Amino acid sequence: QVQLVESGGGVVESGESLRLSCTASGRISTFTLNTVAWYRQAPGSQRDMVAQITYNGRATYAESIEGRFTISRSNVESTAWLQMNNLSPGDTAIYYCAIRTGQNDIWGTGTQVTVSS
Image (cartoon, rainbow, N blue to C red; front, side, top):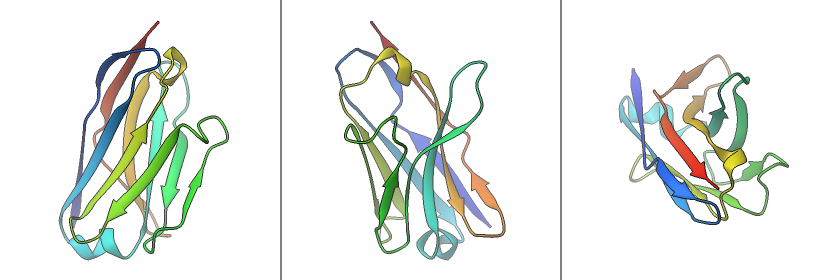
C-alpha cells in the first residue's frame, strides 16, 4: 500500500509563486510505475485535474493553467512537484496529488492554497 502526503500550500498574494510537493511512502513501486497527477478543488466546485506526468516524465496540463504551472517528479525521491507561478485568486483551492494506476486513483489528503488579491 502506498501513501501520499502533500505539502507546500499556504497564503500568498497575486502574482506570487508556490511549489507544492507530493511525497510517497510505503509501496514506492506504485508511485514510480504510474502516472502522478495534481488536482484542485475550490469551494463549491468539482475536483479538476491541473496537470499529470507519466512515469517517464511526459507532462500534460489543463488549459486554464498552461504556461504558469509546471509538474515534475523524481522517482528516486518518490516525490512529485507542482511549481505554480503568477498565482491569482482563481487558483485558490485545495490541491491534491494522486497516483493513477489505471484501475484506481490513490489520493493524498490535500494542501490548501489561498491567493489574495
